[in-house]
Length: 287
Image 1 (spheres, rainbow, N blue to C red):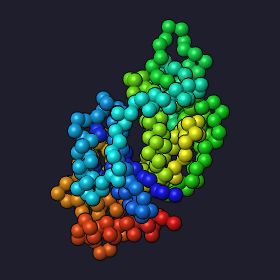
Image 2: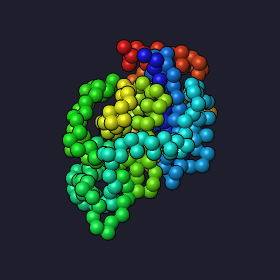
Image 3: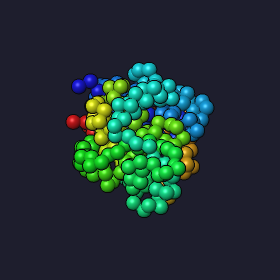
Image 4: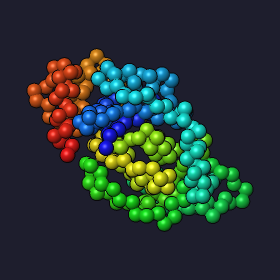
């Protein structure tokens, strides 16, 4: 198998410590497997995209010694590809007029990613006088989804009760993350997805979409997310500070802490860091 991995940041601001950990994990895994590592810019949500942020992300990664082994893919330029996949799923997709408040008020519980589980209100058709807000995939009696995560172990999820019918096209007209990521992983030939554990709850839905679209399912590995002093996931919303571009080695050394890697003695140059970090990752995480 020719290994292909990827890092897929959203250009909503500069990289911070949490996103560096995710980038580092995916990069080290690709290098440990002597594979390719790709960068994908997930800029579908144009309302949240910050002008120039994508270019800054790519430049920052390069300063830290991580460069894409192929052309950088921009999701905003691939809307026709997502439309084609959407049409392929036409028999299992239906329009939904429910607002977020209406779904939350149904008290059907929360999916693993924190989203309210859809109660199926519009599954048999829109209520009179209502217009579509979004388009959902009818999971019906979807099979029990099981997969082996390389770090988290055996994961099992009954999709119908754990997530319900999920959105493929949002109310604002943007394609949903679940559809875009599956399409792009397949077309880029991604064999291994290494990402933060905050996305573990999306994986069953993505595997189900892969089955419907008849595309391969990658191997998955979900690494711990960095949290702040309050226990919240480190993010731009929780006040994460941008990486210090003048201290790439120190930032990388700090990131290894969250991945359980020991680099002793501490590397004194970027080259020395990579020469030590790749075999350290291989010893800990690769078979």
